[in-house]
Amino acid sequence: MAHIDLFTIIVGDYDEAIDFFVDVLGFELVEDSPSATNDGRPKRWVVVRPPNATTGILLARADGARQDAAVGSQVAGRVGFFLRVDNFEQTYDRMDSAGVVFLSQPHNEAYGRIAVFLDVAGNRWDLLGPSEY
Image (cartoon, rainbow, N blue to C red; front, side, top):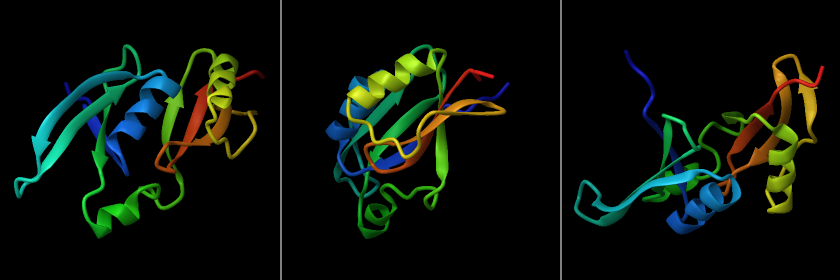
């Protein structure tokens, strides 16, 4: 058996990213531990994940010009992350009230109810819920 344990989102600041994913999206802070880069500089190992999920997100602070340039553009401007929720309207309203930037209004597609939003780093996500067809 195999599953994806973690994937990385490069962020500009650990604490802003934690606030967004935990306080705004309702994720759990799984770990926030001191760590070190390969050359010994301090960093943090920060993992968040939706409640009851097995896959987490490693929030990695950008380190250097190349990573700085990737903040908000990890998938070249495409929607690259997908958050599926049971109660779309309630989640959308909570996120909208918290100031999340939505790039599209909620609408229905064959695969469900959808609205595109930006995370704290500027990456595009789909908020997905059950279809209202």
